[in-house]
Every structure is written in C-alpha cells, then in structure tokens.
Image (tube, rainbow, N blue to C red):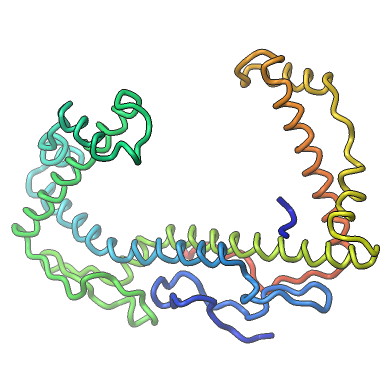
Length: 310
C-alpha cells in the first residue's frame, strides 16, 4: 500500500547501540521533502517494534555464539583424537543416541498443545514427530558438549561475548579450549553475515516507513493545492483513470496461468477479476506517487549498509 492514513544523532528507543553493535546512530532528521523534514521521532510504533526485534536477534546471537565456537573447537579436538570426521562423530554420538519419538509421546504432545496447534492429530502428526525428534537430538548434542567439556580444558572468562568497542577489544580473550584462545574477533567474524543481514533489514524497515510518510506529505500538499480532500484527490487521479477489466481479460489471464491455478475458469473468475483490478489500481497509484515525487526535491540522510569487510 502506498499511502498510510540537522546533524544531531540519537537513538529512538531504549535499547542502546552497544547491546547489539549492529545499528550505528542515525541523524535526527532522516529525510527532507523540499523544506519539510521527517525525523526519527516520526517513525511509527510498528517500525520501532521491528527495529527492537531486529536488534534483539543480534543480542541473542551474541549470547550463543561463544558457546557455539567452544563446541566447534571441542568437536575439532575430538574428531582429531578419534580419527573421525565431524559427520561421523555426530552420527555416532548425537543422531544414533537420540531416540525416535513414540506414538504415545506424539499423542501426549498434541493433547497438551491442541489449542495452539489447530487441526486434528493426523494433520499435524508429522510436524510434531519432527519437532520431538529435533528436541531429542538437541538433548543428545548437549550431552556430548557436556561430556567434551569435562574431557578437555575449557575456561570461559565471560558468560557471553560483549561487542568490542575498539580494535584492542577485538583481541580480548573470551575463552580458551585446551589452552587455545577464542577472541572477541572470532565471535565478530562469525556474526559478520548475520549483522549485515540485520543492518539491511533495519534500513529497509526505516526506509519503507519514511517513504510512506513522504507520500502522505505529498498527497496532503496536492489535496490542499486542488482544494479537495485526500480521498477526492485519489478518486480523481487514480480511481477514475483505471481501465475497465473485462471477462475477456480474466479469461486471458486464466489461460496464461492455468498450470498454476486450481479450479475451472468459472470457479476462479471473480477472484481473477478482483486481482486484476487491484493490480491496475496499484500501478496507477505508483504512477501518481512518482509524479508527485518528481516535482519536489527529496533527500535521504541515511542509506543502505556497506557490505562487511572480508
């Protein structure tokens, strides 16, 4: 949907940049439309929630990554000692030892969670079985990790990896496995792809919100210029200009996409007609918006993240 009814830097919510080290501070003013501006404080509540959730993904990953790296080092030591590949070791110690869920366990899980699962037992049996199997494999993997931590010398200096705030911090030793250090830089390198993905999502979430607000601003200005309401402007500039969709248009669409459509033409005709009308409306709306945007100077004070350094 296209419309919704200075050099200072700050954060818009309570979660600090240091907690995730994934979201550098942004300018207070995110974009300008002519002489008007859109600020961080203008972002909607749903956008703020999305930002917090995205940051939390990195915070949660930081709390797990150090232990994952420790487990990886332990697996390397154990496979070297036994002369096995990692796959062979996991097959023997995890997958072979994780028992298969019984029919009674599947039924018991369904009865306890039926309200959340929905459907009959038969319709969700395979999903429940896969979930319980994964749980059993996780327990077996945890048992292997506990065993290896008793066999090899593991020392943790921190419970989870804090984000480094300087180049010196990257060299900080967070744990040792058999005397070999795991540094902050090891954690950062492991999280590099995730952090970049989160940064891209943060940019897109903010950009979408800012674009909607720009469109609203331009529509309000156009309505004032024409002496009309917003709805009247949209009716004049979009709705009245929509081409008529005929049964022949729907039939042509059906013929072109028949392989991907379930049901006869008569069964789906109205759905196709509705779809084509909506498609044309979106195209007309986009064209109208682009015309309004081309008449003003729009500047963004933020951009997509740079790719991570290799």
